Image 1 (tube, rainbow, N blue to C red):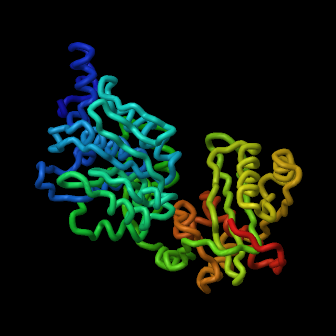
Image 2: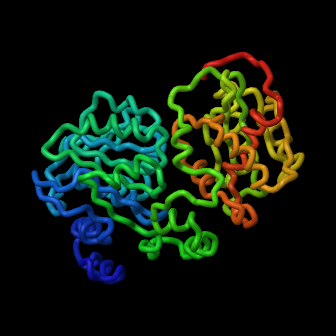
Image 3: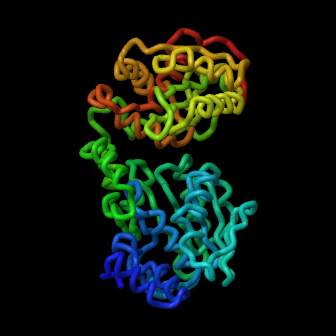
Length: 438
C-alpha cells in the first residue's frame, strides 16, 4: 500500500466497501512518510522518552502529532503501544491548542474515522474516546495549570513558541507518571531557544526532521513558488522551510543568548505603558502584517516588552480595533503609530475604533537599521527585558541585518518594537504617571 501512488491508492479504496476504504485511508502507517512515523518501540521496552519532530511550515508535523495521539488513545499495536488512559495536549495558547491540535484540518478530530472519533468538550478543554481514554488541553501561558493532573502520554505542539517554555515543560514532566513508559511527542518548527537545545542533547530524545518540500503534493504550487522565490536560500527559509536549527546570526543586532539573559517572569509595577503600531501599506492576502507591540517602563528605569499582538493580513479597521483592545487591556497611556505608509488614514481608522484613545503619530526619516541601532544598544546595556518568551518577535530581532533592511523583507514586529522603546526610553518623555500593576 505504501508503494502505491496517490491515484493507485484511490483506485484501491474505491474498489472496496465504504467502511473498509475509510479504515484504509485512515491507517496512518500506510499513508505517512517515514519521517512522520515515530521511532520503533516495543511495549515495556521503549528506548526513547521524547520524540522530537522538527518540521518546516506545511510539512504535516501537526498530522504526525495528532496521529500519534490517536495511536496512543486506541492502543494501536502497529506502533507498539498499549492504550494510554490520560494524555496531555499542550499548545502555545488554549486557542491554538483547540484550533490546531484538536479542531484543525490535521488535528485529533480530523484524523479519526467517524466510528473512532472522540467527543470534544470544549468548555472543559478535554477529549473523551469511546474506550475511556481522555486528553486534556493546556496552554504554555499557564504553566501552573499542569500542577495536579497526571498522564501517561503528552503531545507538545510548537514548543519554540511557548511563552513560559521551561516552566511549562518542567510542570509537564512532573505529571508524566502513569503507565509503564510515559512518553511525549514534540512537534515544532525549530528555533535556537534554550529548551530545544536542552532536549536535543538529552538522553532518551529521538529526532526526526520534516521539510516543507517533502509535502509538496499536498501544498498549493503557488504557495511553494512564492515562498521559494522570497525565502529560498535565506536564513529564515532554512529555518522555516528546511527545519534547520540555526545558531545566532553573526551580523544581527541581537543575539539569542543575550535575550535569554534578559527574560523576566514576574512583572514589577510599571509607571508607563505604550502600544506601538507599524501599519501595513495595504490589506489582503499579499499584505504585510501589522506590527503591534506593547511595552512598559518600570520604576527602576528599565523597559519591559509585554506582548506581541501582531496581526497578519488584517484590514485597517481590524488592526485598529485589535490595537485599541490591547491598549484597554493593559490600561496603557497611549498608542504610538507610524504614519509613513498610511498618513492621515492611520489617524482616522484609529479614531473610528475609539475616538478617546490618545495617539502619538510618528514618521520614519531614517532607515530601519539606523533606527534599530540605538534600541539594540539599550538591550546591550541590560535596560530592556522581555516578559516571558516572544518567539516571533525574537526571530525578527535575531535575523535582522543590513542586507534585509535594504531588501523587500518587512520586519513588522521589530519596527513596532523600535517605536515602542523609542517612545519609552529615547525621547526624553519619561513622565510621572501613576504606578500600576497589570
